[in-house]
Length: 336
Image (cartoon, rainbow, N blue to C red; front, side, top):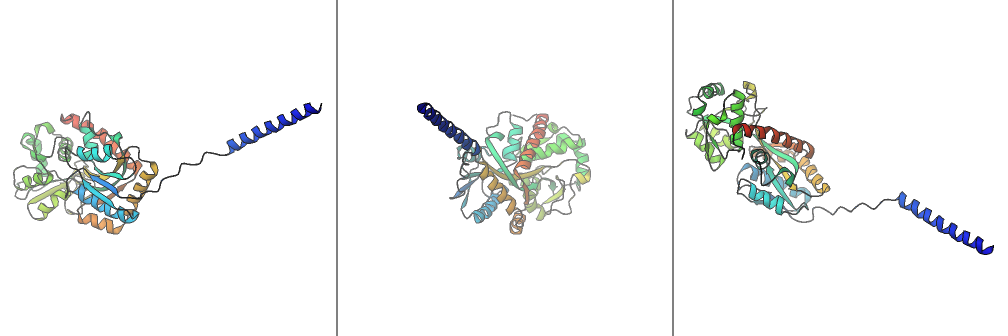
């Protein structure tokens, strides 16, 4: 009898231990994975273009302000070539997803590449679009001695003579080609009848217009401003919803009844797989510096606009534009 009672006592203790252990297990969770301190060393900001352009200049400005905030050096590295692909591959495909390699991305290297190519070498899903930090509207210009005094005169002439319209373009899927195509679509002209002239750089294209070697300039306001300020170009319209501070007296296309909005922009991208907390830190920091009056003024000195979109809005905008411009490039017959 005593032995039986002893066995019952032992079994009861064991059962109680199991129950307590189970309750303890259900009542606690695994400790959260500790986020590594970031940043603790130098960061590389890759520019997929050469020095001196708006992508490079604004990337250096962002690098300077981020470096001051984080108290770590942010080194800008230029990797031009192959239509932005060289820099994108270096920064997004070869760079580790640890936050120490970022890319100064732009619409040409993302939206236009994906919309204009059936099998782009760098796809949207190959990167994390963090936030937008700059934009720069496109505009239409002619040589200072051009017979076209305003946009209305030029549009009427294009409608009657689309095959005589010459305009510069970096490639068949460049911002220049997109801007000209959007104009043609808005005024009911077949873009395929026009005469794009391929150039090696934006500066070469705008110089061609100023010299009278092509009729229509379709560059950004930043590229157009120096020759316009020097009296070599006449700016007829800005292809965005709002007037440009560089050309306050020049109407927008929408003011003239031409429904287009074409704007170059740049932002920060990170390699896919980068931890969320690092993505959020970049986004929050870009948001902060976009409110800094010194940053805004320095951006204006470069003839760019400080323009912020957070991660969610930036990604939504990119997806919408890819759909829109894929359809446009298909209609142009240039989608590769």
